Every structure is written in C-alpha cells, then in structure tokens.
Amino acid sequence: MAFELENTVPWGRNLDEYRSMFNLTNSDLDKRIISFGDGPASFNCEMTALSKSVVSIDPIYGFSTSQLTGRIEQIKDIVIEQTRKNLENFVWTKIKNIDELETIRLLAMDRFLKDFETGKIEGRYLNHQLPDRTQFDDLTFELGLSSHFLILYSQLGFDFHVACMTEMLRVAREIRIFPLLDLNAKRSELLDSLVAHFQTDFVVGIEKTDYEFQKKGDQMLTIKRR
Image (cartoon, rainbow, N blue to C red):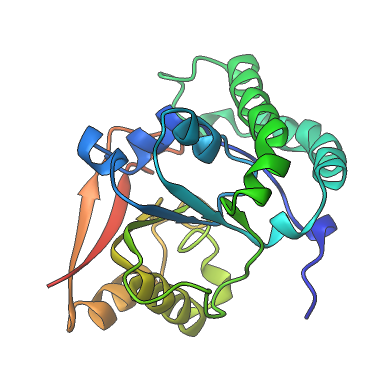
C-alpha cells in the first residue's frame, strides 16, 4: 500500500530531547548513528552542524519541502489542541506549558525544513519504510534509534515490530527505542513479547531515561549484540 502524507502526523523533536530520550553520552554522539522514523526532527540537522554522523530514515522524506511544510501547517494546531485537552497526561517540568511546547516543536521542524533539501543531496535523509530492507551493509552503524515510532504504534502488531527491529539490528550493533508506551500512554502490550523474542540472541534491557513528557514515559528499550 502506498504511503500517504495525509495520514501522517509529522511532529519533530530536537537534539537535546534525543539526548535525554536515549541517554546519549558524548561518546554516543561520536558514533555512526542511523535513526528510524525521525520525521521532521532537527536531530540530524543539529548533529550535522556539530560534525557528527547521522542518517535519518522515514517514508515522509519521499515528499518535497513544500508538501511537508503544508502538512505541518495542517496538523500543528490540531496536535496542540489535542495536547491542551489532555494536559493531565503530561509532565510539565522541562517543558513548562503548552506555549513553550509549541515553540520548541515548531523551531525543531523549521530547522529540519531548512536543512531537508541539502540533507537529501548529502544522503542524510533517506526515503525508506520499515520493515523493508535498507540499502546498507550489515553493521554499517554503531547505534540505531527509534523515537516515537516502534512500540508506540503497538497496533501495527508483533510481527511488524519483529521485522523492523530485526532490520535495525542487521545494520546497527545496538538499537534504542523510546518510549515504551502505546498511544494511550499505557505500557505497550507488545513489550514483554518483544523482550522475550530478542533476548535469546541479544542483550536486551529496559533503561530509565531523564526524559519524561508523557507520564510514566521515561524508559527506553535497548538491544545489543553479545
């Protein structure tokens, strides 16, 4: 089935948030990183400005800057209003209020949009949809990330998640997935089964992070080669 932009909710986060979500140390930032489902995050742009190595993967990168700008304009007020109606489901500490949230998100997405065409030419933004096999050789990357994609969309099913994570582990020595909640802000029903599946051949862990915006959404899944 063709990927359709009108069915997506592009919503971007920044480098500081990625560092907190994934417990990224200065040493981690120096690794070769592949990040899946990045959408309009400014992570790649900001890392590139620091001369770091990141490749971002997402099917929305098959669209033009103008198309993505239009879609962000269409959904930004909807997302903010939905958040406003559910303020009690979020932790308002690092992000103080709904206005600050909107400012942070729009700044991240603006940075992305300004960098997008250059990043595509440089091969930093790749149009690709998991679980299809990527173009990369085995273990091309040291670290693979998935922010607000895998596990969050638990309705995609166990087999889909296994296939996606297997491809991530083919190209990266370690992967980290955040958060471990589903779209209803509950611990994903897939989590225990995924841990059991991968711990046979990999070192699997659940780690607390210092990022919590969704209540109880302060853990990530790590899977590493033995």
